[in-house]
Image 1 (cartoon, rainbow, N blue to C red):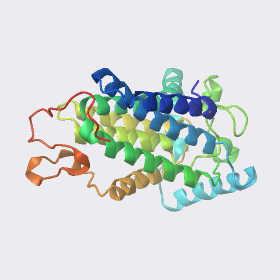
Image 2: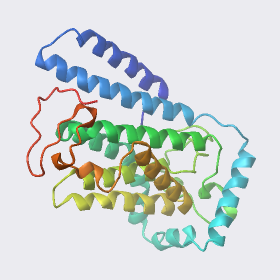
Image 3: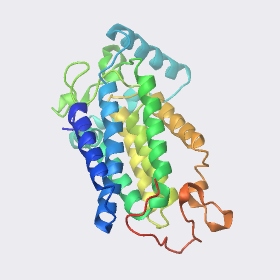
Image 4: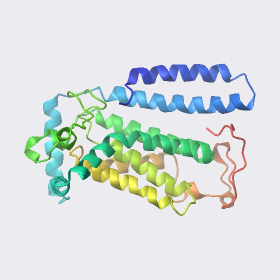
Length: 288
């Protein structure tokens, strides 16, 4: 079970204290530990805000149900594929359903953690801006989620089952409790984070296997719909917010992460080198 916001906030306090204590030291290990502690403090801060915001609600449950039905009807008017059809395709296969439930509950946060650690360790010059894109995207999602929207699994007449509940794999408790709030369907943070992981891996890495990471956002979009936790438009809006976050960073998500010295880009104090050459920098160098 993921942390609630209180222990996450306490972790921020401890990490900030560690950074302050190590600041006067100039030894290599102190610089490295301080850099990791600072970034962990930022991530735990974002996480605690996300967890706390999930408890907030500006309107009643009835309003959330109405908005969920309205979103469903809007998708029908736009002739989007039916979420019911997607779910019914997997219901005859219990193992597939259980895999979807586990992926929805368990892949979301670990995938982002692994992505951020990979960036921080192996691609430090790219880390600060992608971390900022993550913060902007998550913040925008949380602001919109302050207006509750019920997921399709909570609206019986839509015909979608709560597949995690069927197999005793639900991460939710009563309304507003459990690992995450239940009335924050729009937009999908799952899809926003997964898309950032996939896009970031493709644009940053030079490995020929990097394209396989795109399976994560595709699979996430399928899982959130098949389990009855989200509408199609939840994922669409999440992707739009992610694109806007890239623009807010004054980045082109197609070319900016692959620029090299030929462009003369030395922003944020990072040294850009020609393609194919390693970035020579000390392990504890500050780039954020």
